Image (cartoon, rainbow, N blue to C red):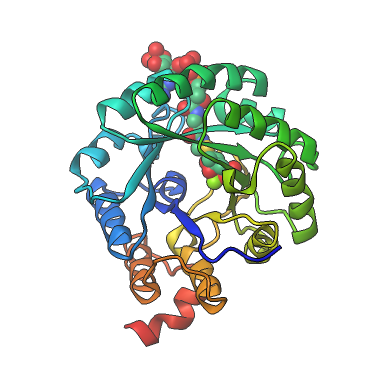
Length: 301
Ligand code: HMG
Ligand code: MG
């Protein structure tokens, strides 16, 4: 299969990245990060989540972030919602894209959203319906597609089932989440192949955490199967508070460097993105984990 000519990058840093910060990140830093990312050419940005502030206090300023954000035309600002209450918050905040998130592992589903997979799908159906009825786009996520921190191996069939259920609800596409970054290319291709039995490649994306340093290889493996949607976090920020040991998403600048080198279009200004990676990392008091950000630091200073 020919590789895609262009890849849509969903920037997850402001949500997936900052939801896992131990300290509190000021709202104005979050807002400035999102605006800087839009300046880099990112057109799909996950801004925050409307989840329970008891479960994820880092996202408690969700409404404030959305209110203060100067939204650019042509940029999608997605928020994650776990239930109807979250959707109400998202609607009040004027979100035009929401993400709903299920898992391929029962144990992870319980820990992350306090219900079984089947219950979560029942819970998400009216959320998707209500969102779509208002013209809000809905994206799905499936966690633990390449392994679970509690159950270990996850069958590709289990991933495909949940993916099919989310797409049947009207999700534009489903981000296949390697939540703990354990996947390797052949395993990832087997999982994606199972999903391709229930969905065309255009409706599948990859959302890989880079815990074991496999994410770029796994993204390439996904591109080989025709996948053209990829989630990543600037500076490699992130992790899931309910996935022990998981580190951040693959760094956006690492993905863009690879795709630029392969002649695959993303519309993103890499030098500016690297400056943004350093900017947010300095605000968080550390260096970016991204190899590209570190290698390019002097060249873009
Ligand atoms: P629960 O405790 O079972 O919820 O949590 P509940 O319905 O029983 O409600 C309990 C209280 O929470 C009530 O308040 C509700 O009003 C409130 P009280 O009456 O006690 O004062 N509540 C809410 N408040 C604000 N916003 C809401 C909301 N819902 C209920 N939306 C729940 C269930 C799903 C709410 C909880 O488990 C939760 O919020 N979980 C979210 C966890 C999370 O955000 N995880 C990280 C994101 S997922 C991820 O990172 C993976 C991904 O990146 C893909 C990958 O990498 O694999 C997407
Ligand atoms: Mg994630």
